[in-house]
Length: 301
Image (cartoon, rainbow, N blue to C red; front, side):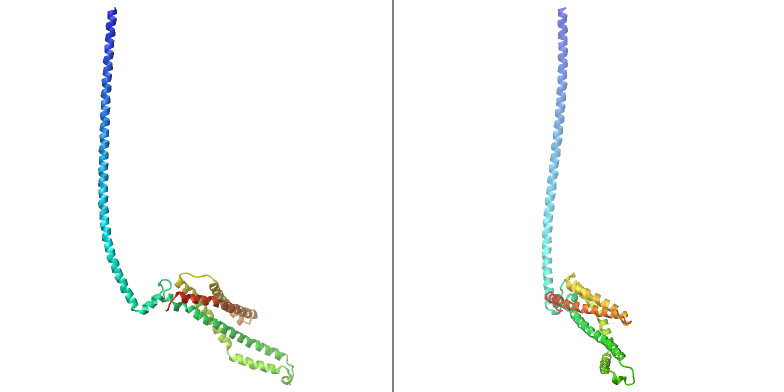
């Protein structure tokens, strides 16, 4: 019995040992296959790295070659630019020689105050048109005021003569008995002289000249400043000029009512023109200051 048990135990032990050995062999084979797989993967990684390094080397070499080509092209461009600059220098020298040989062209270029886009309109001659003719307009304003007062005197003298005649006594010997007859004769003579002066027509012509040419010259002054400098300068001179033009228009607008005998319109006409002359006089110092700047920053013509 014991011998059977002992044989059975040996058989089981041997069977178990054989199974363990089989498992160990399978595990060893699995480990070997895994290691081979890892080796193949590492070899692939190395090959990829080598390919990347070779491609980077090729790109760097291509970059170097392109850089060398660019350097060669830049050197050639520099040479061409040097030759072109030398040719430009020769052309500029020839142009300067031409300008130096022509004093008319040189003076015209010097007259360009802003940039030469408008030619002689930027010169001193065009800039002095406004102050010169506005000075004439100022004298015309004073003269028109004198003519208007003389024409007003013709009307007031006639009214005064009528008042004196109404105060004369009625009768056959009224002329000898009238104590104001000498005054009437004196005023009548004065009125005839005033009427002979044709002050009404002269005043109307002077006013029309102021309204037409004065407005145009006021606009021309602003245009010339913009052409020469490229901008306007809001200030006392500009605002006074705008006020003068507005007063000219307002005074001229009262003429129809004045012709109908409206005394209020006549008084308003006189008041507007008096303010206009005062504003014109106040504007003269700022205008002379601008003329000084014109002589400072421009040249003839």
